[in-house]
Image (cartoon, rainbow, N blue to C red; front, side, top):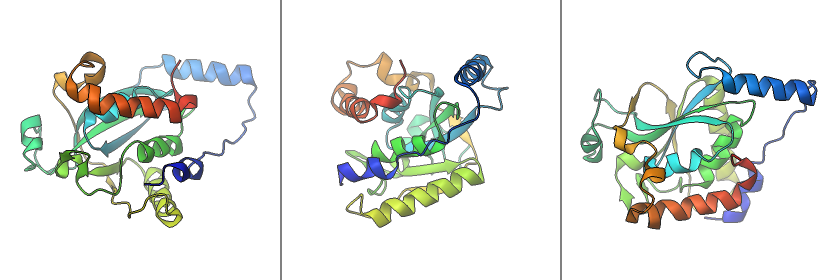
Length: 217
């Protein structure tokens, strides 16, 4: 993978608004205070990028991401258990569903983070985690997400940012099943576990260096 080409390729061009700085700050504060279930200003995206513990740990750090839930999408069995998903018989991918404030972080920026924090060229595998549940996937919630995801995927492939073709599937969102409670906030609560120390922590540390400007205070 060519590490130095993907980041500049996905730099987002910010459009200057007509609002004053004070008015924009007031808008952002109001957005954050509203309930996420009732606030139409917030948006949702669902990403699969290998083990959801890793994905959760990264996106929890992103400024503008209000909520991260680990769970399962893309399968045919209702209310699957972690054991069933790991057996690879339900068709689900391990995913994280993000609620985010587009006034703070755009979908383009989330795509940038998504593609740079996992290997989207390995089919049904991330590192030693192997199986269809670990596939790279974007479950889009609207046509804008679909179009942007497909556009960036094509641009990345054309740029040669990765030495192999991107295999990330871009499919419509249908259903999200929240994973068992012990999977939620996993890295923060189990940081001393071997998988957290040797797999998740290096990914999080690298992410913080590359995306220092995207981190929460």
